Image (tube, rainbow, N blue to C red; front, side):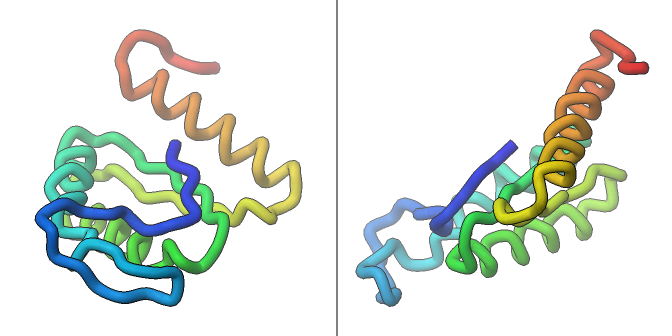
Length: 107
């Protein structure tokens, strides 16, 4: 479960300008390997979006998941969703994590 209000900030000392200031150049480069590994290990990724500054990041993460074709999924929910949707999203993430761990099969 990932709750985010700002894009990933990569390393390397290269910077680019945003409305809110200076960030590392291509902040998604460092994340790509990690996100692809999660997909390859069939870990579903659940992201709760707080604001649109994460849109590029979530679009790329979803593309990484889709390109790996492992059956793992990228899930996205708006923080402003109604409480029932939010509860369902949280429940699903916990159930899938437990099921995929092989340690427990939820009802």
